[in-house]
Length: 239
Image (cartoon, rainbow, N blue to C red; front, side, top):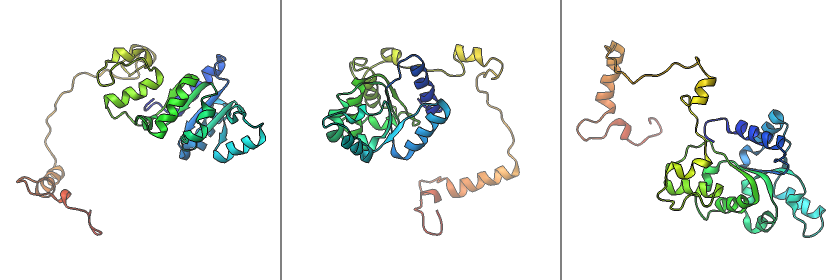
């Protein structure tokens, strides 16, 4: 999810899963700095209560429940910092013994490094949930192998060769809609003007624009291979 208001998209998806009886047990994993905001948004906008846990909270639960019982069964809907859960040596055996209706992992662009703690956590959680939502507001870096790593969390069999694959191989895993998509155009009819091909229009520069160009050419743009002002390292008085 990129550029869609990811918290709203996640809330809508979770609310629909709950409505269908498929969202009883929910785990949301976010970076620490957005955890409280994420919890607040899902409660105030969608009435989805999530119990916020950290390592101290998990230890407290473990002290209160019988020895050997899984602390993640104590609450049905939980939000936890990824920095807490990525310690797979401490929590992996618990996470492998519990299933969730839905798992949300925010900032999923940080999961692409195979073998990293975040990637190991995602690979531990992915097989133990019916619905896996990977959210990020950071556009993908375009690397085929790293994107394949994300796709493998959703469907391990979707891509045979992580270096060479086509959109058709993963079309069952994504929906892409733009303002020219038929369903979008139908709902937004008349609100967007149709765009034609680009057309160059020549105009005469104003005197002020000419002065800006002259300064750019004389000061900022090198013409003979020499360094421009923009190439000079910053100092305390000028950058």
